[in-house]
Image 1: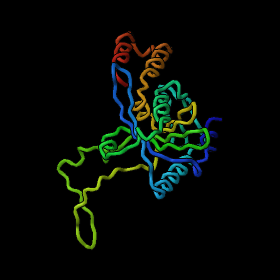
Image 2: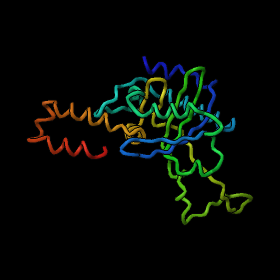
Image 3: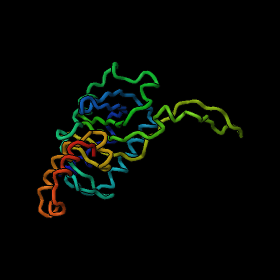
Image 4: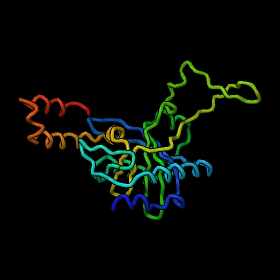
Length: 225
């Protein structure tokens, strides 16, 4: 049972780091760039608590497909080799000093981050799309202040939000998906849509809804989903 592998992963004793990624599309193919950064013990404790709490919510997996939908207690499951998740794991395997974050600009405007946990030879990636706190444009027209000693004080310290949940998990040869839309966006999984869509059109119950499915096929084949 694949879910048991996720549930049995030793989060508490695992080595933890955070990877930040940028994604570009070059000639219709996704290209990723990544950097890593260490965290202080207090943040590591909170992150492991977030992950343990989130993992405990799930009781089943369902196979990923075009029409599949999960609920609060389920995760969609797909092989990592069928997605560009392999690019994420390969890139983050090179955790060298050359790839370590050294400047704040290397964190700003990232597309997503992964809490990387290593236990023995097993690696778990907990992936989340970044929110607006990671964008430099959020500063335009705003001044950050804090309340201190009964006064408001200017505070220009850069801040980035870390969510208490994750969009999907990469563990070994499997991807466990909580947020289908984000998963497909970050991993550019349109190929699966095209394959599944063509299978769907061949289903009599679906095809009878259209007098001619040709225009629909052409539209789906040339537009992002």
